[in-house]
Length: 220
Image (tube, rainbow, N blue to C red; front, top):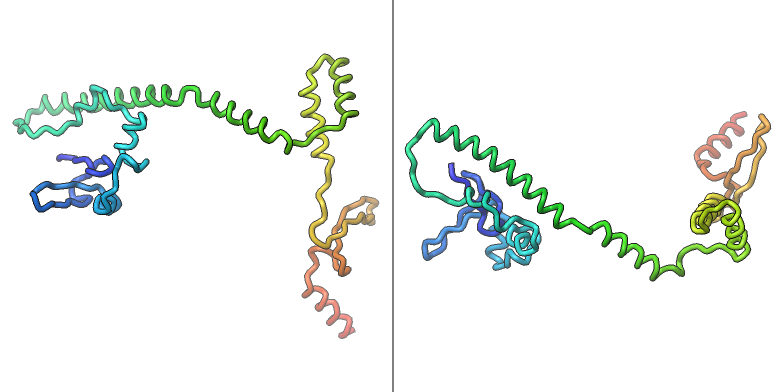
């Protein structure tokens, strides 16, 4: 069973699957799906599309020079069936897949080396450029944090982060729209916060409930 490669994207084109296009000069083009066939008819360049093997090879994301890739080359030499040869071939296929997976993993590690440092550098640059948007502490708070840092032997930055976190936690949610927040004392002695509207109705109260109450009062 011969598994050909797609002419456009490079994916395997399995037997009885895909599309085969025959040109007038007799050259055949095998496509794994209609997407590749349509892009081929629109005369698009596979090297400029990120989902193709050609683009990945040019971008350095695929193993181009590797001895394991030679085993996938097309061979049209007929060989008489031999059981020992078939057994050796199956063992070699398993071993080749293991070696190729290991080499692809090593290639990925080399390609992604230093990515974390680049992300941290870009994040620091973004923070430095937009530093005016960050929340700031008052001068008195900074002086107090400096004194606390000198007493406790800590860094001022750590205390500033803790102070900003406390300030954010202390801020209450602002009322939404025409809401007015007020405190109400429960019968058990507790206190709860409710949101009233300017029209006098409590937030979350349904108009149907009010109509039902009016009907009950009329019937009484």
